[in-house]
Picture (tube, one colour):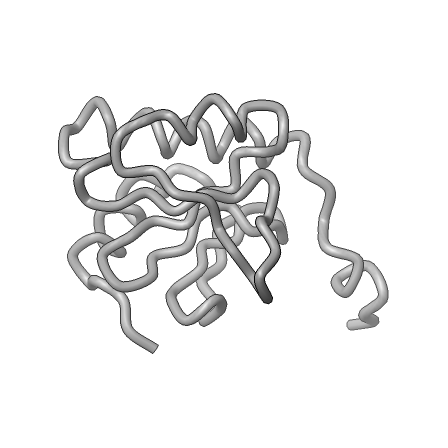
Length: 117
């Protein structure tokens, strides 16, 4: 699974103050789970951002943003952001904040709640 190590390190640094971060290989890239919920994934040189359905349509109009499509289905609330969309500090910080803000209200995956540790 390919991911941009430089971008992954940048995301790590942005999330360093959060004690609830775990890294997993998901979606053909490196996923950053916050509080057991997908927050951001680095896939190739793109960021997969979980921003929630409320802002989904609005952010699709932004530079470098495309919807996540899985099995020919648009995944409402998930967008890919290309390097063109996060190439400035302000733009990168915008996406990190948007993902973390949604993570606070996101529900954990059903598969996680069914697992027993």
